Image 1 (cartoon, rainbow, N blue to C red):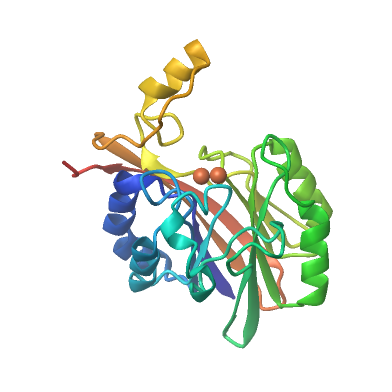
Image 2 (tube, rainbow, N blue to C red):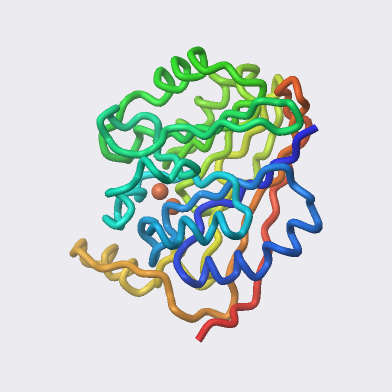
Length: 262
Ligand SMILES: [Fe+2]
Ligand SMILES: [Fe+2]
């Protein structure tokens, strides 16, 4: 049995602080074989820097997935191929820098991790269904774990129904709000969205006022995570998978962490 902990989008300093504060006790509690984190919002809510990537690795994170914000902080792009545990969505054009998968062996079991972007309500990108299917067929592995970074619940559900029985786990990210639909069908664990690690008093991790202003005026606004908030939401999901790749359990968690920043 392989136990995987997956942490959804960590948003800014307030999210990082709550994550690193709680991580040691969560490692003791779950004793995971593999820890995966979505890092697309680590740097002030948008993108990831080399420093923040290495900070994750120094804290025992095995693989960092991403999404539509992966290139927002330009510092990450130059040496992107060197960050072997950071994966960008597989369905960008092949010429785009960065690693597209992470493969490892745990307890004599091969594990493949990939990340895909949805097409609905997101900028144009290759079809995630076809790209994922071709890649999995060309790179067989005992356990296949997919972070499907997408906006529409319908697209995520369709992805789950199409790939159930073919992969071990599909976790949704990007919407930052944890959904109440964890499921296992035909040995595939699924949740529409794992949810974020970010400020409680926020709109998906960002200060509410500029977001509300944009909805009221339709004018551009600069969004950023709040520097201070009383509480941070820490969402994550534990998944166990047999060595044959069949998921056995999926358990989402949502904790409130008292913030000590500022
Ligand atoms: Fe995100
Ligand atoms: Fe996203």
